[in-house]
Amino acid sequence: MRLAVVSPFLDRSHGTERALAELLERLVQQHHCEIHLYSQRVQDIAFRSPDTARTENTGVIFWHRVPRLPGPHLLGFIAWVTLNSVLRWSRRLSGSPFDLVLSPGINTFGADVVIVHVLFDRLQEISRENTVTQAGFLQRIHRRTYYALLAALERRIYRNRNVLLACVSRRTADLLSRYFQRDDVRVIPNGIDPAQFSPSLRLARRAQARATRNFRGTDFVLLLLGNDWAVKGVPTILAAIAALPTLPLQLLVAGADNAGPFRKTAGRLDISARFHCEQPRRDVIDLYAAADLYVSPSREDSFGLPVLEAMACGLPVITSTLAGVAELITNEVDAFVLRDPNDSQALAQLLERLYADDPLRKRVAEAAVLAAQHWTWDRNAAEIWELLKFAAEKKVAAVNSVG
Image (tube, rainbow, N blue to C red; front, side, top):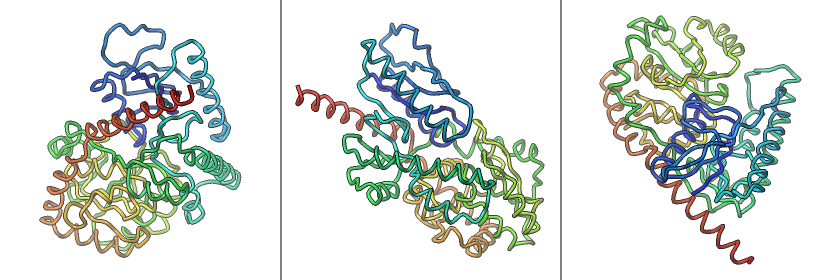
């Protein structure tokens, strides 16, 4: 199958992009797809120049570099959608059409299959409730306009029943039904690679990972990964830590957000020394190795890939009912699920309980490893491959019926 895949960038330092990289590698290796990747930046995955001839029968990824225009996100996104469409159109004119166009989200009007990782209609609702101001007035206006454009594109693309939709959780499928009246969405959860995430690999890195960050042996380190920290629950975690002044809790957050507003919150709560930030990294297991507990009281998360990775690494995990990954969890058996992600008191009580009960942490962590191993990238890719075959058959049938 010859696929055009449209994604602004691809790497293994961000959740959606990491999921796409895992999928594309398996489509190439296991199903011998010829993938034409339209992207502005590509890292951490093998590719060839589109000028290179394909001589073997194995799969391959060709990278078609899409120019990136500097400037605000809003203008950059408009340019991105326009340019990737022009490049694909020019290839079609050259006589090399694609069987399908695949997109992780709203990157083009011409997708045959879209894998939905986030809903901007829902993020708009959440942003109106945001109590942590991360930007000035003009930046907030720009962000709202940007989200409004994305939400408008979602309405146009996702309501088109000729576009097949897959999503990463039942929660997201329910939102697609609520916002766009789509009741034909396939739920295909994200996965993990057991060769990359395991208790043995985490423990082997633990001493160095903690020493690098100056954590002491007595520190009890909470970890959160991702962007949109207000949505991910950082304010709730900070309030819970402040409510437990006698416990040696430390919070490590890795992501690309502006840390300034959250540092101010930590300062106001008198816990600045317990709040640590760093940039996302490809070698994400080093972050899991530094932690004692993964905490993600998310106010909205289509899935929550780091939760599943942390479970695979043998870390006890706290998440919320508003994260799609909670559907794969049995509360108090293989992880802990908060009913209200804004309830810092409930989180503080759970943190205090877990800190004091080492056997409970170990029991839940052991069960978490077994649960996570059921959800692998191989399973994810096999289910998406079936969807792609169905989409290709449907497309051919539609063309034949017109002819």
